[in-house]
Amino acid sequence: MKNKFKKIILLAAILILASIFFVIFRNNNTEYVVENNSQETIAKGIQDKVDLMDQEENYEIKILNNEEFLDHMTDGGGQLTGHFKNEGIHKIVEKLGFSYGVVTYEYYFLDKKLIMIHETEEYFPDPNNTGTLDYTRVELGFDGYYYIDNEKLVDTEITGKKRFSTDTIDEVVLSLISFSKKNVELLLNN
Image 1 (cartoon, helix red, strand yellow):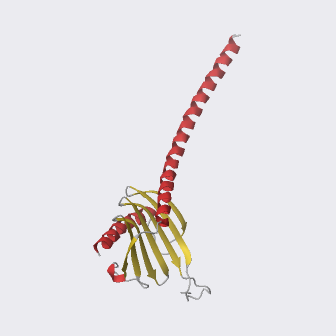
Image 2: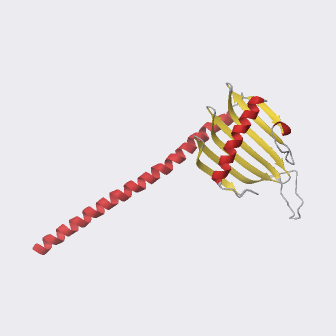
Image 3: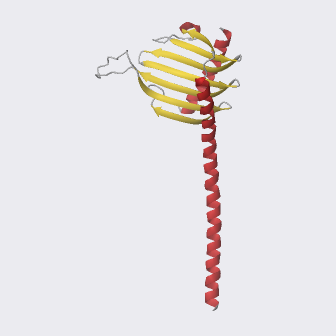
């Protein structure tokens, strides 16, 4: 009888320890999922605001061409377009032409704060692999969405690969945040 009682107590202790372990593991796992969802939630909220900005049709548009905003002229020139509403900047589109294709940066602002950068690289194809590019069309080679909160990268969505960059995503985003500030100043002062 004593052995049976000891076995029951031992089994109960094991079940209690297993239950405690399960609760701790579950809580740790839940915290990770909540944190991960928080980034996704922030990015989703930003994307929803950007979608509304893209649907807006009543912007005041300001355009700067080539030497009006470029320190060094690119092969295919460039254009910087500011979209303003209620005396505030909402969107900047920077389009740069190169010998290999077109690079576009779209900067989105909410309450004068950068919230998203959309970067694309489109390449002129070499259909016959001869080194002769077809300048009549482009193919998407890279598509990157960088979601920003308080000048910090909170999430990314990236497809493809950049042609020349060896920088990390964090380095790219820091540079683009700096360029966005410069572009805002150029558009406001010209």
